[in-house]
Image 1 (cartoon, rainbow, N blue to C red):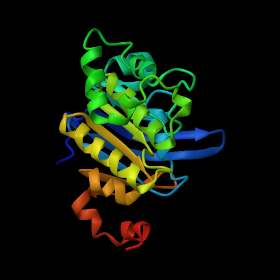
Image 2 (cartoon, helix red, strand yellow):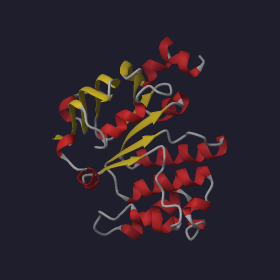
Image 3 (tube, rainbow, N blue to C red):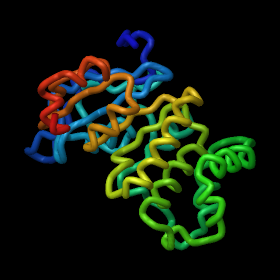
Length: 238
């Protein structure tokens, strides 16, 4: 898929973010078109989480980030969620002493109607959550908590879903479940930004990739073109 910024759902231009005197992002350019799955890959400390924190409205920045044509700095995080942007953080941010079902229903608090239908869709996608719907979130395994985080994101009926390291710390069998769910999500025409240190996982799902290193985009291109790129192969042990 091409990269025509005039049709982009999200457009990032010359993005710069600093923590005091430390530069975390330095001149990042990136775009996401409706229906794409974009992978942002790179090693730990590359700036991936800073990038998605900033896109989601949590950090001040220089440069430009527009979502649906509106500068992110001019919108509250509440407005971004209401306009279809949902961010599943690496930390998951679940309410541990609330039930699985209650956590899921909280994901739909800004939507009008359709909650019951979306809940059943999430349970179809993650049968284990249905089995544990009355359990407290803190009693779930790490993999089940990741499913719950994704499920809560889907309850918001997102147009644009940002996932930060969804594969981190998961056993292979659980990662397979997350992978199947992500495939199903993209088939619903949800636009996805997938930030991953696990480049193999990103290569499996993304249409295009941005390789981030030391706060700067070092490579960008289609998944097919970058699979043979020696720079990317160095990250996946190729």
